[in-house]
Amino acid sequence: MRAGLLAGRPRGQLVVDAEGLTKRFGATLALDGFDLAVPEGTVCGLLGPNGAGKSTAVRILSTLLRPDGGHASVAGFDVLRDPMQVRYRVGLAGQHPAVDGVLTGRENLEMFARFYRLGPAAARRRASELIEQFDLAEAAGRRPKGYSGGMRRRLDLAISFIMAPPVLFLDEPTTGMDPGHRLEVWKGVRALVAEGATVLLTTHYLDEADQLADSITVIDHGRAIARGAPEELKSALGGDRIDVLVSEPGDVPEVARLLAEVTGDSPEIHEDTRWVGVAADDRVATLARVARALDEHGLAVRDIVLRRPTLDEVFVQVTKDVRP
Ligand SMILES: Nc1ncnc2c1ncn2[C@@H]1O[C@H](COP(=O)(O)OP(=O)(O)O)[C@@H](O)[C@H]1O
Ligand SMILES: [Mg+2]
Image 1 (cartoon, protein in one colour):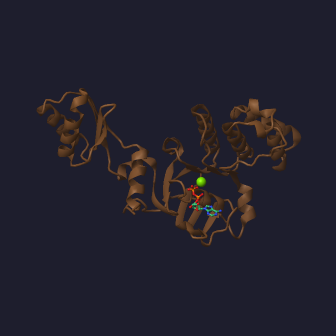
Image 2 (cartoon, rainbow, N blue to C red):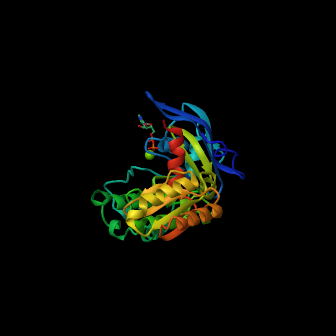
Image 3 (cartoon, rainbow, N blue to C red):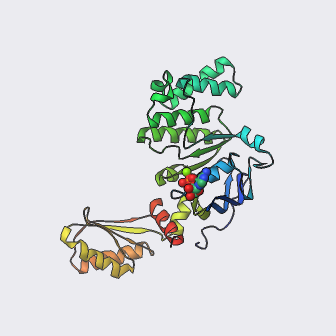
């Protein structure tokens, strides 16, 4: 674990507050002392490789699964002592949507809206809004059996949005969705947050976390290994980067060797696109040294870019640190 990456608990009222959660499935320790804190009215992105324990955490927080140890409260209610109070306040969109196979998309939405005590007219209205918002016109008159994966997932999400719940858990909400629909889901999440909702979102897509999350918790092997705002994580880890676009394909190895010498970092080399990247810990000073060295060696470059690391680079780095 890196010092500084897990320091401090967030300020403000915590809507999700979990400490030391453990969960074992046979020989697998799915959660191993997992901590999570999500302040009210924010989006928390839970990032981690496959099998890291994300869904297990979401299932415990939504009272579908009992932890073996630790404790957690959601919206101020303990998940073990007051599960019903938690359920009243949480909307959950699962990774494996279980939407009713007999009803059409619209009937599904209306049924859930009635279940949440909307009157018949209000239920119809809400169903129509969600059909529009999630681009479900095609699905509205058909049964889920014939849906594409993306359509099924959008219906599942629409159902979780019905009551604009104060707390929303989204487990990989846009996996397998095309980019247009992902944008629609992001818009929907932002709209709920603007109305005061608190969202916990697990995702494989780092750009999704970067776009939506106020804070990010990285989980691996059932433990939180890094936590912070996306920008904080990017600053804390390795700092900025320099990318050099080499003019002549034949010069790529020589430029890479020179960048390694100047920065002491091992460069990332993309032969096919002629980009070479290195860490730029001293930012502009490093940039100046790199430019001077290239010039002195008569190496022509087409572009030099000083930039922040992407969340992908941060992620690779933190998970590498804890893996053997
Ligand atoms: N019901 C279960 N029975 C047995 N093992 C499980 C069960 N649910 C999860 N696991 C195991 O626990 C670990 C964490 O799983 P999960 O929380 O689904 O990870 P993630 O959602 O991050 O991919 C994995 O090794 C997974 O195989
Ligand atoms: Mg999962």
